[in-house]
Each structure stands twice: as C-alpha cells, then as structure tokens.
Length: 395
Image 1 (cartoon, rainbow, N blue to C red):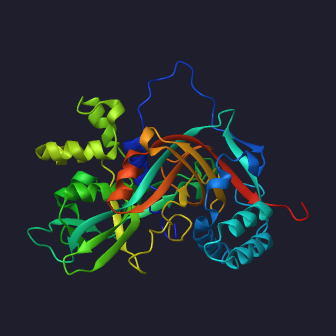
Image 2: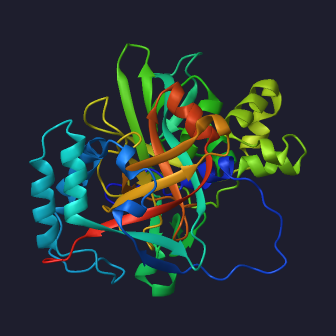
Image 3: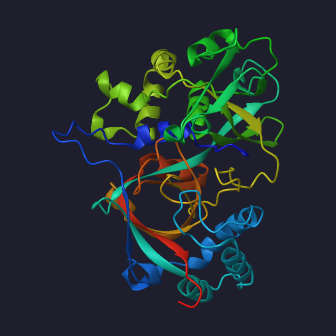
C-alpha cells in the first residue's frame, strides 16, 4: 500500500474493543451480498439538517488523489461509479464552491450525484464503530521516563498481497521473513518486547507508557508530543503478520470485564487497576505494528488507505471490496449510548480496516485528542448508509 493504510491492521483491534460479543446463531446468516436500492435525496434521514459544506474539504482531498490516477470507466469491482471525465468535472465544480456556504454545497451534491441505499442482502443496518488518532508523550532519545520504543519497519520484513497470486484471496495479506528460500513467521509481540529487534537501530521514538503504545498499535497512527516541545506524527508502516487477538474478548473470557461493558475506556481502566498484569494481557495479542514518521503539518490528519489525510468527523473507513474509496456517503446512525444521539452527516469513504467487512459496515474517524478518543472508544452504533454516485450525463 502506498501510502500504507493506517488501519489495515489496527481496525481489527478497534472493532474488537467496540464490538459487542454476540452468541452463536443457530442458523448461519447468508454470505454478504451488496444490494443497491435507488432512492431520492428526500429519503435520506436528516439530509436538510446537515452542513454538507463541512464534507467538501474531505471530498477535495479525494479529488486531488483521483485526478492523479489513470483514466477509467469503472471501479475495480466493475460497478459503475462514473468515468474519470465525470469525476474531473465534479471535482472542478467542488473546488469552485464558496467556502462555508452549506446551501451551495447541498445543491452541488443534489445536482451532481444520485443517492443509492446499500444493503447486505435484505438487511439495511449494520455496525458502525469509531476511531481516532492517538496522542502520546515521548522523546527522540531513551531515558528512564521514555523507555518504550515505537519501532521502524525492519528491512527483512516481507509483506505479501495474496490476491496477486490467487483472485479468491483478494484483500488478504501475510507477512514474515525469508529464511532458506521460505517465508517464515516474523517475531511476535512478546518476542519483540523481549528484545528480538534490539541492537538494530529500529527505535523511531521512545514513549512513556506501554499501554498508550499498545493502543497506538490498535489505532495505527498518532502524534507524539516530544519533550522538546515538538510534535512527531507517526503512521502505519507494516505489521509482523501475526493474527490480531482482541484483548477485549480475552478479558471477557477471563471474567475480568462484562461482555456488555467492553469499550476502549473500560479496557484502559482495567489496565490502570491491574498494572502488574497489563503486560501479560497485552502479550496475548501477537500482532505488532511498525511506524514511520509522517511529513507535513502537525495539524494534518493521518493518511488513510486512499492516500490522503483524513478529515475529523467527515472521513469513514469502509470495506473497499463493497464500496469504492472516494465516494461520498450519507450516514444515519444511532449510538448505543443514548446521550450520543444520532449521527446523520455526509462523509467520504477514504479508509479501510481489517475488521471493516461487509456491505453495511463502517468506522468513523473522529480526529485526535481526549474528546475524539472518548467518543471513538464508546461508539457502537447501528445504522444505515447511502452512497452518492455521479449522476449520469443528461439525467
């Protein structure tokens, strides 16, 4: 991936934290199947209450990326989403819109796009979680306070896109190291934390909390507030190939947290109350993330799978095997916690995630900082979404 999706591996953890643990159903559900239902803008719940102009910065970032790509008439799934020429015209029109004019923005979307509802077979709702950009305290040099490393990608780590070898494995990948002409498993989390990568000068930065570093591995991207007053933005640069083990599920299995209470906050609270067991529990997850320092402004969002900075509250991760990246998406969500109310807003599909699978499944990016972490960690919403596809010429 270029640039790498910050959430390809992180999301397995994010969804595991937020996801309620359902029991086994007596009859397995049918395989996922995307069903498209044509609707009108008047069918989009809350459409006229949103400030659609706030989604334009995200769309313009997608436009910058789309305009760099080769000419096309279809997306990689074969479902028509508009020609390159259509998108160039759409993007030019979006770039010419006045800033802060929600009425002009709404008219733009209504005249240039048509809405379709996305269903999974006959199911029109699915799970929507949230994610954020983690914030840590750190330093470029090790010290008694800053003793937990974030590692660069090792030169001997080999990542393989399995879909390049077999179409049925599209979207799946594996990683390891080559030994004697064979691909072998790479060092696990516990092995790395026990020194497997020591003396290789792979330490990118040092932070002051192993728990914060663990959650950064889940999120895949963050910013480190340095002891000299600077800010280092770090992003996903590889994974060791080991399967992600959801810590929330492990704590439930051990009777430490009630199934219905699993959130990022409840797991953090458990770690704080049981510091002597934190490393033991974190080591149950053998997956390990490698990072790189990200260029650009410290206030930029992390880079998503589409290769553009994410926009807080207006970027969403989707299953790219079901929904093409770059499409505007209308969300209609109900949070599990009543005080959070409804989320009805226009967003742009700009990211993916290992646990974001299926036609009606999403992960909403909330930004960085304590408020973003709080809402993302608690978000377990049920809802629907609608894709806005380019209107056919003359329609």
